[in-house]
Structures are given as structure tokens and as C-alpha cells.
Image (cartoon, rainbow, N blue to C red; front, side, top):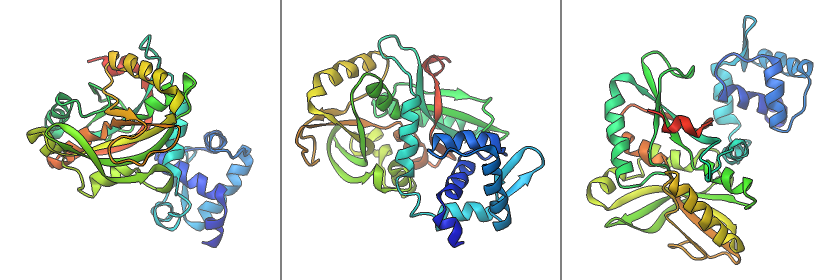
Length: 317
């Protein structure tokens, strides 16, 4: 057990296998390890996998590759929680790099979240999502349904929502340094956002802050939808202050393409602390759609930052 806690290569292998539940071979693992900063040969990965097999954390599925065992899943979920601090932001930053969306041409790939819903719940979830979009409390103005994704169990439908990491990718590609700072609960009074009630730093957490707020029952998107007053989910990003006019231009182009951000931006916004020479950008999250569905009792589970997808697919029926 002490070996698995101190050897980061083992930890990365477990992380990758958790993110990819289908059996995975050494070659593919080696490629993904390189993306995580660990350059290992296929033979070296095989060595680590045999050790993980012996510890009971992985098992071989014929010639298809390895999967996590229940023991391995429990290990990565609990015993390695300290090692997972910052894992979420690392995952989202990698996803931002893969985002190629161009707001001027509306081409390229956007980052997305994948929500998995039983077929019997699809209509209820659609109504929940539509109600949130009607008050423009999301990141993008529509969503896309899929039924052919290999991650979908039989009898389930996938809801694809545009992840706000897309904005990070766009800003980075256009030369604006951007930092995803906080995920938070934003109080809304009579339809007007007023102040943050809670903030969680993305660099100090092992779970996505917005997913945490939803699972803890700390949102009131339903109240916002029905009365105009409630608590929604929003992200805070920081960029250099001299980039403000350029960021406003980019935001305008993205709004023309159907994006619903920002809520606001400035040196001092809401009750956030002012940072010298830094511009705060506040945007609603697509997780408000999921939060509303959860509040209504819908059966739904969501993978945040599930991948990238051509923007044109989001717009298709």
C-alpha cells in the first residue's frame, strides 16, 4: 500500500483507467501517460500493470487490456485523495488545449459535458434544461442529444452541453493568458446576480466544485427559474487587465455564436476581492441545466469535461 501512495506512475495509471472504464492495453496507456507528463515504453507500462495486478488494483480482460477492480477504484477514490488535489484543474486545462473553436467562423471543436439519462426520463430532463436556457442561465444557448455514444448503457440517452472550458481554449488560442480561478454559488435576486455565497478554488480541490454543490443540494436553480430569485452556479476566471477590450471583443463574437457569457467582468465584481492588474470574468455554467434536473428529481449523471466535439454537432437537431 505504501508503494502505491508514493509512486506517481502507479497513481497516473489508476487515474487513466478510472477515466476510461473500457479495457485498455499498454500501448494506449503509454500514449495517455505521455499526455500526463510520464514518458514510458509499452514494456515499462506492462511492468507497472503486472504490479498493479498483484496488488489487486487492476485485472486483465483477455487480450483487450486492463480495467480497475473494485479495490483499485476504492484506492483511487479514497486512499489517494491527497494526490488528487489539483487533478480536476489539470484535466480541464488539458481539455482547453484541445479546444479549437473559432468564434469568428463558428468552426472547430468545443469542450463538452456528457449527461447520461434513462430513456424514460428524457422528456423531463429536456424540460428542465429548456427552462434554464429560457432565462439564459447557462453557458450556451442549446444542447445536443446522442444515442450512439459507446459510454451510454442500453436504454439511455446522452445530453451534450457545451463546457465553459471552451472559453479558456478560445482565449488561449487568441493569445490571452487565462486562469480558471473559482467555481461558486451565485445568489440571484429578482433576476439580477448579486453576490457569491461560496467559492471553491479549482487548484485546491479533488472534485469539480460545481458538481460538489449540486450533489450537496446547495443550488436553488428551480427557485430562480420559477421566481427569479435563487442560487445558480458560476465560474470565475482571471485574465490580465490590459486584455479587457480584446476579451470584450471575443465575448461579443461568442455571444453572436450562441454563447451566454459573461455575466459580468471587471476589476471589482460582486463581492470578489480585487486583484491588481487582473480582470475577473464571471460566467454561468452549463451545470445549471444539470442542477435544475437534479433538483426536480430526474435520474441523471454527468461527466464534466468529457471531451471535445465539432461545434456543428451541437447545432444539429
